[in-house]
Amino acid sequence: MLPLGGATTIREIDLGLGTTYERFAIYRWLECLIDRHPIRDVLEGPGDGVAGISGINSVPLARRGAKVTVALRDRREIALARRVWEAQDCLAQGSFVCANGLPLPFTSRCFDLVWNFNRLPFFNPRAMIAEMSRVSCRYVLLMAPSRHNYGFLARRVHHRLTGRPWHYGDIDVMEPGKVIDLLAQFELQALEAVLLDAPWWPDIIDLSEFVTDLLPFLSGRLKGKRPSSYRWEPDNLPYFDARVYPEVHRRIDRLSFIEGSRAHWIKRFFAHHFGVLAVKREAIDD
Image 1: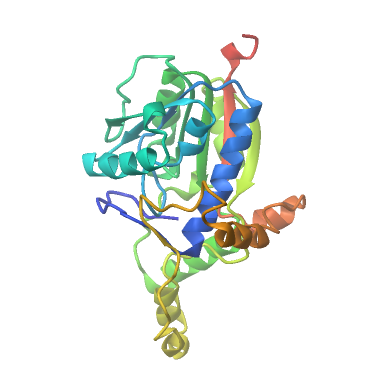
Image 2 (image 1 turned 180 degrees about the horizontal axis):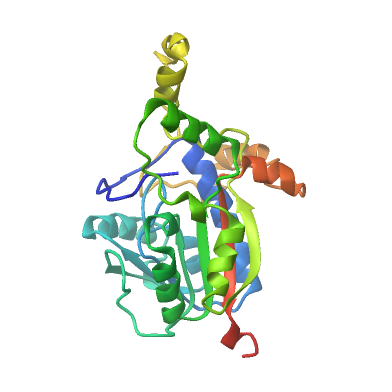
């Protein structure tokens, strides 16, 4: 989970196994989503809450033939995202607009799907859902952090004990039931809720900071750790080509044993994120 409230830092790389696993989990689900539903025109935004390169979450949708518009807050983010889309031969399927917040600069009912990743906790939830519904003619998809994973509890304890400010947004919208209820208030009927990004490790931003603050006697063990070998720049992302990055794909497959589990209670404990796909009630009979 990336703290984004007011942040202006541009992430120029995807760094670490956690970000890599997160991308694989989300991309695989999005590929299944577009295979099941009639989605031709997509808007991703406003913004992107990923802990990595912004504006590339919808590449799998473009690879399946959708026309995608990405709304990002900063032209530097747009320039970086365009490099990824071009490297994946998807630039013809994508367009980019600079939109820092609400309202969105689009006419009503002009996209089949409007969605974003990890932005709901940082906006007025009702205002955000209302605006996403306005520009969608059919589907609204929200992905957000899950407050039910065990790493979330560890993070809350950390902040309570240290007095550090909470930068991760509104925790009230970090569970599927609350989001489904909010969507219903805008005549959006939930079609499915899915738990995503469920590796065995906890969702903690800075493990060294966590250990240093709460378990200082262990802090020395973290010194000398080698930097992650998972460091992906815009032109060498491993997510889309198993032939070029076979070992990365094999490792993610091995780590996905919880992701593929049918035991909901297990996934609920480990999942870092969830997604809720809803359809406008007026579009159900179309």
